Image (cartoon, rainbow, N blue to C red; front, side):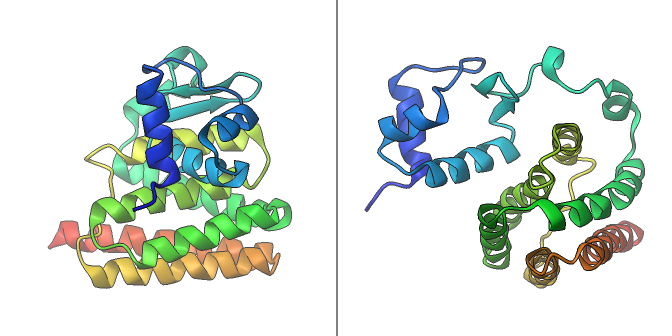
Length: 219
């Protein structure tokens, strides 16, 4: 069976005895060393970044492990004192605006990657698989804005979402399918370059996530 790009990258990391905190080579060289296209490599790196296994800094490069505190955005109060309800409220204010901006700035490659995430979400067989692609989907929308400050904030939000008390579990396949359709609606609005529709679809999606989480808690 042919290896995936991620497996090839993991073999490279193990073969070079790289550990958390070590830098990966520049993207062009790493793609050549792995024998893959830069587009395939970017997709693999985006997946690792969304799951917190690497971090990338503008002008600094790509490093293994979680982003060190000294390089993290100075939002300690957000990390330490925010409740799940606070985070949901923040996302509701922030991410629709992010989607509206992404509709004007997303590249063709961005849109293809978002379409891929939506498909992967639709095909997710369990919550762990859903979470991987869901986190990547929302981070990619942030990256599509091309705004380093907004991207940094989205990285913080994604990092907070993995905490057990915040994580929105999708145990039922029906729930995953419903959310995946909403992801596709967001992608369709982005592809149409319709910022207003993208913001509306994102808001509806986040409200659905919040409502289902509240309903589950009430039950």
